[in-house]
Image (cartoon, rainbow, N blue to C red; front, side, top):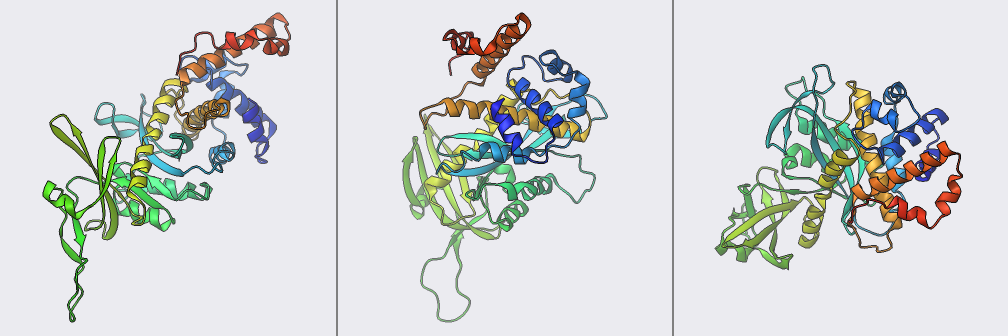
Length: 397
């Protein structure tokens, strides 16, 4: 609660009633058992469900809130990047804003529901991600507009609030589109992404040129055969994976890119993957580390769905849905930041959100008991047994 209050006080546009509402909401989401519906939120707090319904329809700058809450950590000398990805959220009914068919990776098919586009700040050295901005993907009525246009617009609208040290955008293979790459570079950022195995790539010609005529630019098609690996630069073996790299030309993207070819022996077979970056000067090992850290955004979606009610919103309006998605992800941020503040080991990155929810709920229950019984909660908190009671039922990380 102290962290939320301190950040909200730095946001001068927030009035006291909304500040009080946000403190109660975010605190409740951090310990709430069950679904994060208006009625269930009212069961575990002093606000009525209609108060939550009204509060969710008010504007709030979650980007600014997350920027301020993370400001202490993004200046710690670590490598930071921004990851972008989408998550499917099931939703029943017919009148909900943005209801459409979206790809559900859990079932590997398109299903009717909602989709959430999210930007996350990734601490590559600490190997974790924090929510930065979420926007609901609308139902597109213009046939000339694609969802890639919308994802790029999300990045364009919020990139100005990114910390100054963030230079790289991390994305999965779906975002390896020409318009997305061009849009990222227009913002002064570089993309680290994944390529299709059958991508049309050409070697850059490095030999002597003829005295007359147009200089030769390319030296044949890149083929990922065992005999062709000698043309790549061998980086070595990392985590049991052999890395090969080179600067080549992408016919489809119409630009030079640095690729990193990954080969991992699994039994009698070889598993391969192809990463790339628009920054041709970026080291191959860093491309591998950056893309590996991209997966932390997937854990954000998982934990928010399991513990802070990301998919539980009962509202149907655009504003309320936007508020709910961002509030759920921000509450997860606060749990992760509290864990990091209490951790002494700078390299520890394992966290149990389930344990934190148990601790938060036990603390809320003790505070509730002391309030109803007329006890002094400050004395209870100072007792050596208080921490033991808060950890009752917690799961080891």
